[in-house]
Amino acid sequence: MAEEGARFQNTFAQATWTKVSTPSIMTSLYPTSHGVHDFPDRLPASAVTLAEVYRNAGYATLSLSSVLFTGEFTNLHQGFEELHESGSASQPGPKTAREFVDRVLEWMDTHQDVPFFVYLHVFDPHDPYEPYRPYDTMWAEGAERERHVQDLERVRKFIADPLLRGFGMATRPEFEKAGLDAEQFVEHDKDWYDGSIRAMDVEIHRLLERLRGLELDDKTLIVFLSDHGEEFLEHDRMFHGQTAYGELARVPLIVRWPGGIPAGRIVGETVELIDVMPTLLEVSGLVAPEGIQGESLAPLLIGARGDAAEGGGWTRRPAITEKPLTKDAGGPAPRETESYAIVHEGWKLVHNVTRTQNQAEFELYDVEKDPFDQVNVRAEHADIVERLAKELERWRRLAENARLPADADTTDSLSKEQLERLRSLGYIR
Image (tube, rainbow, N blue to C red; front, side, top):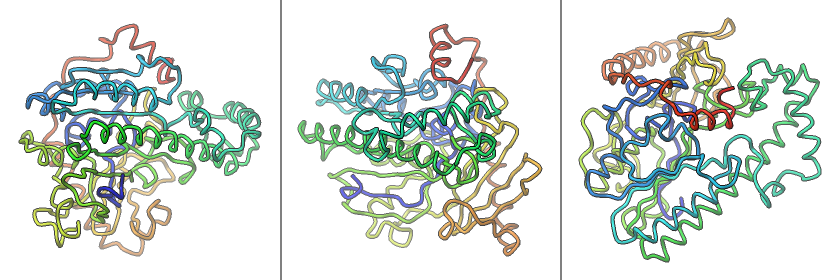
């Protein structure tokens, strides 16, 4: 897909877990502005979603949501004529690409003669990492599965946070308390994770094949992205949502449209997921809603080289990632920390607003040399820290001033079925 389209090398999510990140993709607003920060939050009805713009323009709209965070629970069903929630899957478990691609293919057969917008959210590269056959042993040793499961139950007893205990996500100190080799354990999980990615890749290939078969290939623009990354002990934790570091904030972004985007383009500019909405709307010839905060990537897709020098109309600007406080037990730990990261001109500054005793208020990283934020060079570059801190504060004031008014709706309005789905996923007890 990347060879047939454009691949962005430096894309940053606006948050590092699905609940907070996806509303930014669908509204082109930062979390500070759209107001979804914690587990029970819902996108205000005043927000204009990408799906709403397409539906109002006469497009058929379909959403396939592999987790409640991207559906009705977060009010992200706005604008979709048809919504397939995770609870509708016929097979239990989190691996959803095979079934949801089946549904998309059937839907496209009946909508091939009308313009359409489809949001396909699959859960394969996500915990629990073990993929279905034959991908479960593509990289992981099948004979090691029983030992790995036993090790998981062993370390689970030492995981302090109830949510992470349920998911089996230990910190490095918790592995040590359990007497386990953390790196060996994580390598097995990463092998499963790779298998899950491979399984998803096969399903995406089926989608592309059907588009070609329906002669829609040159007419259909596809954006492939992830709403967050995953940590495998890069900062002594597992899971996601806990920080704004590179392993969680940097995400893939591929834009493919054989009829309109030159093949093989590689874009090195720093971009954000909030840029996806204005890009799609510009390419579709639709007017973006007032107040969106992203910037269309069209100049980088069409320019001679795909960079700022050749892409007229593109303005370089910082990328922002937020890690809000998460007071609710369903949000990722640590819930008492709040951080904001800014990436600009090759540097990344992390401002730990609310932090643990061991954290510094500011951290600085060389983005190109240190993509996973391992070496804090704050002491050597005080001038850069000061400049980026001012830029981050300026952004924060603008984002806060643009905050949407909150609705009166709360999680008290959830149905019994929705609560049961959350329990089955381990987010509530």
